[in-house]
Image (cartoon, rainbow, N blue to C red; front, side):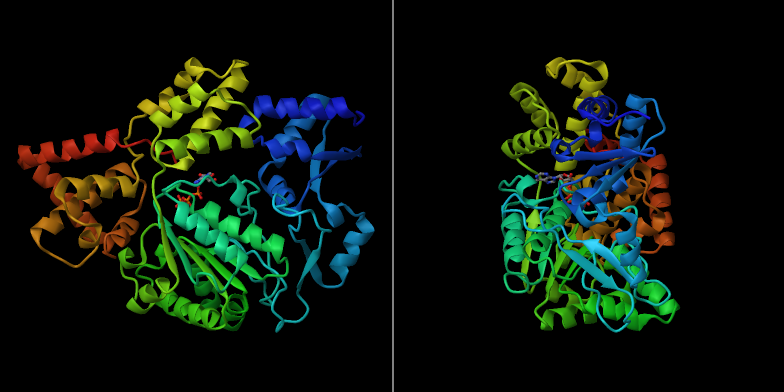
Length: 500
Ligand SMILES: Nc1ncnc2c1ncn2[C@@H]1O[C@H](COP(=O)(O)OP(=O)(O)OP(=O)(O)O)[C@@H](O)[C@H]1O
């Protein structure tokens, strides 16, 4: 069995940088190998957010690196503080009916000195006691007793999504300032905080930033953080299983409720009703509510008036596309996070070419770094042009977003999104609406039902009828066919988005 020494660890890191560049982060330097025994390499993380993240998102590349550099079958395990305890301690924690979750007390140690780690317990023994702490996720399920909380594999807080890693500019200043204020004074500064904007513009980053800052300052805070879809799924399952008491218990005992993509409530009457009561109860108890959405409250189709007005009670902050200077700063920050220096001219080149959103900028950095690592080449303009060639000239077919379609169509026909989503039947509105549906079907992967939902909660037969109408008209009317082609060309010229 190979011995654990500095060289082995250095080789592993080098292997990761070479073969798995996209996962590598500067903070990997803080990881500390503890022991290599019985085919298990134990690695200590600085905080529990890192531990969770690495264990769930990066285990395979680390296993691969360990095996590649030793030639032995080795599994990696990430540990942090008490979880690094021996099996006896672990058994003790399990046997008293409590699942232990460590708070990320030192996680955002950027602003505060490290404090001793604290262990929180999700007590599964008393069904009427609220859990001490929960970060719930899409796949979390209430168990048969309605109490134990299971953290899913596909959701973790990302150590990258902190306030200090968030680049501000005119496009997101208000949303950022409000998020920091909420983290400092939950329940009082702005309640609810409603952040809306297009894809990849940092809404989730801010939501997680708030959670991480609060957990650092007030580790005892009970945060429930779910996607809107998870909220609705849990609601439906709870109704079906007769577990509404537990469902309400979970949500209404929270100190802070964070819901991503709240626009999915659109047209979901029963979920809206349930959320309305959850909102009221938390709001009246001065508990913080943070929501993100792809549209402003007034533009979410089929949202009850009473919910729409409540969403506007606190602060509604919009995030928009970053300007050139902000894009440059985001690219620099993303490169730094990966522990790599990218020359200014390359950064400027990328910022000029990619002007849509931060997710694309991040994807571009990843792409360039992967090219450099795999080819063992320096990062220069030639490499960047080569690496981004695909992305810049990528054919658009099937990769447009709904937002791009809406932007193109509303711009071309001078109509408003709210008109497209309304019940209005005037030709000046119905035609652009039908074209949107037609383009959405051709250029995105949304289902007929989802497309209908987005354009005013129309059902799939309406969408099918719209598509057929546009197809038939294009066949018999050359002028109209040219209009559609022109719109598709505009879509082609819209900035590329990453593939889903
Ligand atoms: N201002 C910013 N500074 C640094 N990184 C950013 C910024 N805005 C977005 N990002 C990064 O871009 C990526 C996408 O951001 P995020 O997931 O928060 O977008 P989103 O608005 O929630 O998009 P979606 O609606 O598609 O879920 C993340 O990696 C995030 O860190």
